[in-house]
Image (cartoon, rainbow, N blue to C red; front, side, top):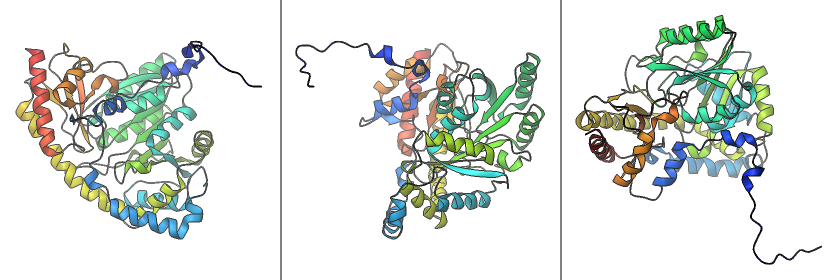
Length: 414
């Protein structure tokens, strides 16, 4: 039977068809800003993009060519949900080499970037109203992933030594007294996003003591620990300090090799990884087989380590330019973190009269972009803060961007 439609289409209210959970799907402010700045002459201090000059393009082209030629039947085929054995083995060896302990009761699953890992964590571990502790501020995409599962988010402030674990302990005890049990603690302990700070060894141990006493799982997100620019900074992973199997470790090759490969992973107790595997089966069956083989070979050939060493030199210089530019141009009374590692710093303006989200369109109009800070705060605070990225723009662009931004802020405060 055929239908011929004539005249105007009937207007459909598609909002009536959307599931209620879509109300919790917040647009990533970072991704939205990238849309605004794409193709325009704007100095972007917004996204956490690696500098393309550190991409090992020719080496990856050679690796990819060899893999398709020699392993094409496997590399272009479906693969196990948990991941290609070559990559899982390579990552286990890589973690061991860099001091990240994986115990006999642990397993590893490959994910499509660490963003999928965060969604899987939420999908498998978070029930509505489960109490999840996060840092204030924390990675906004983690907040967006977790919120879909309707947790009760509790924020703990950070300082130059990372999460204030004394405040964490007070909040956990208070919640316990109210009959509420904390289920998860999500933390970026080394080279924090967005602040760039690192949890001290004393606080790492204290956090694990709290988790043990109150039977809490710890989600350790570790994308940036390879980018530490200062000496005598403790980068011991919580996973390595964990003697009870309660740390679930996430990481990614996005910053240390190339984000376009979309390779992340989760390491944790075998029982949990089995549940993560079942969740991933309904998401995408498996991460790109070809990209997994490319990543495995890049690790085995030492390409990842060489890329990291090259990137550290580039990013250290850019971080220093951003810090010196802030010292030179930024308004008096403003505060900014002094990142020991990572790709970002957090700036707080001296007055809460300036809402950085409202300021953003003017900044873009003036030729510079950033990420408004409130999106990183689970409690809705931080409206006078912003995250600034130094990995992607050129050094001269960083100085120009900070100068433009400072002038705009000065006018707003005058």
